[in-house]
Structure formats: C-alpha cells, structure tokens
Figure 1 (tube, rainbow, N blue to C red):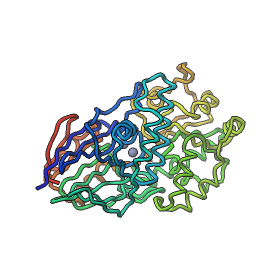
Figure 2 (figure 1 turned 90 degrees about the vertical axis):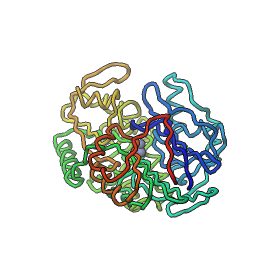
Figure 3 (figure 1 turned 60 degrees about the vertical axis):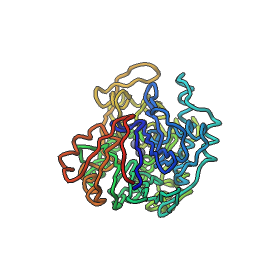
Figure 4 (figure 1 turned 135 degrees about the vertical axis):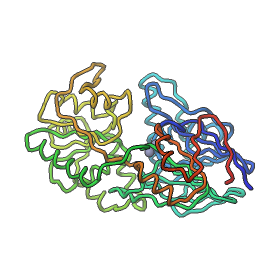
Length: 412
Ligand SMILES: [Zn+2]
Ligand SMILES: [Zn+2]
C-alpha cells in the first residue's frame, strides 16, 4: 500500500486559484498553483516545502502562483515545454497588472526567471519515475500543451486539470485513462454545451449580417486558445480581419510547437488571413475594419476597450462574446445590463451584443462519459461551483467533494 495525503490549497469548490498537495513516499508534490485574477487577485494557501511541482496548463488559475513556490523552493517544475513558455508570458503579465493596479506583488521578476530554470520538460506519452511513483503524461484536450498526469504505484491516480473531450479546431479531445482515483474538473456541472456545428453556423451568420449592414464585429477573446480557435473558424471568410493583444504572441508560440496542434497548417493559414495590429496607426485602421479579434476576454483590460469605445454608440456594430464572463467583470456587466466601465466611467453600450458557447471544457454529460471510460473507484471533483449536480449520475462510485485545507488519504 502506498497511502498518500491529499490537500487542496484552493480551487476545490471554485473555478479558480488551483493548488493541491500530495504527500507520501518521502516527498511533497504540488499539483498546479494558480491565482484568481479578480480585483483584488486571490491566491491559494501557501504549501509547505515542495519537492516537485506538476503544472497541467498555462491558464492563470492553474499557473499564476507557480513562481512563488519555484522561487522559494527551487523545486523541479514538470510541464510541457509549450505550457512553460506561455506560462512565462502569463506570469510576467500578471505581475505587470498587479503593479499597474497597485496590488502587492506575490513574487518578483527574479522568481519568474528562477521558475523557468526549474522546468523539467515532459510531453505526452512520457513516463518518469519519482522514487516509488511513476508518472505518465496524457493530453487533456483543453488548449495546446495542456496535460493530464497519471501517478502510479500500487494503483493509479489521474489528475485531469482542465479537460475537454470533444475535438476542437486547435486540439483533439482527451481520451479516458483507466485509473483507481480520478481527480476531475467539473466546471460544467449540470450544464451541457449546445451543438458545436449549429453554434458555429449561427456565429458566422451573425458576422455576415453585421458586416452586410455596415457594422464592425468585435470579438473579445482570451489570448490562449480562444483567439486561435476563432481565427481558424473565420480564416476562409475573406473579410478584412485584424487580431490584436497578447493572442498574437501566443499564436507564434503555438506555431513553434506544431506537435501540440491538431492541424498546424490550419493555424498557419489563419495567421495569414488576419492582419496583426502592431502600433497605434494600425489600431486606428483595424477599428475601421470588418472583424477584430482581440484580448481581453472578459473586457477588463487590453486593446478591446479601445475598439468598444470607438463603436459603442453604433447599433450597426456588434460585440460577439465567445468566452466565459466571470462575476464582477465588464463582460458580465455587458451581458446583464449593457453597461461597461471604460476609462473609469460607466457607459451604456448601444451596439449589438451576442454570446456564443465555444467552451474548452467538457460539458456535464461529457464528464460523466469520461468518468465511466476511466472506470475508477474514487472520483474527486474539483474546479467546480456545481459539484453536487454530478452526484445523481455517479452513484456507482465513491465520490469525494474535497474542501480547502482538509486532508484525505488515498491508496495511489
Ligand atoms: Zn484552463
Ligand atoms: Zn481552469
């Protein structure tokens, strides 16, 4: 028997600030260490000394606080090389935002440098040994480079991180892995996604309608994944299309690692179909163009605010939301009552606003199918505000709904 102690430092019952320790076999393993980029930002509790850190992917709720640990303990950081490179951009960006908004910085530039020197790159199909524990790496199907980790000793334990099982334009869906203990994300508890094809069709029909009536289409997107997913969807439309914000450099990084993409050629031709905004002159031209794909995804910052400022009084133009809008964000306010805060001023938005579901997370039924495919004894649901909604469908399993800072043991 190899009993290990598990403890969530954050992210058990919320979508945000992930962190979980696994203690046993003479070592302390930390799986993910993120932050919630709220105002003010929120962090998981601090772990004891860490020997090895496993990072699933580069979204801030999973990677945002890794430098606080690698900077302190100099521990090995196991992740895919693509996740490491994008995480570095995200970490510096979140430091920049903390400085700009006057929040205390949770780590320094030096900690980020040190973190990058801690990276021990792993890729899908790799297996490593850490004492008595073997670790295998699988694709999580969420964004390029996103990994699931399988820890094996007497039994096996799979940790999914963020997961999608349906194929997307950028990555193919994740496949179940037989295991005894399954740690799985449950963002979409109780909710399923609408049919992807009809979402794509109505999204493109709306874009054509807006352009036909003389408007500009603004598509706010997260830099990692959604920007590129949308670019691939639109690449053959033949309109004047612009891309702005951090998504541009992420696209370049994706293309540096074609092995993590479903179809590198599709992303390459998408990149050619869009003009990149590189300076303020180009930004003015882009704002008069037909389609603008730009960060930030929840409208709380980034170039998107300038484009909305230009078009907010124009009922012919439209803002098409394609990502999750968290509470207390401009995006949520826009959806709920057509207002936004731009330049510290609350303004009314007169242009059309629509929302489309292009989620990179598995829906409720997809999660249940994945669990059945993994055939575990124990199912541990995390990264979810609706965990109870899975219980009726999981009566054949021992389900654990972990609580922050509460320890439980599993035979790994
Ligand atoms: Zn994610
Ligand atoms: Zn997440």
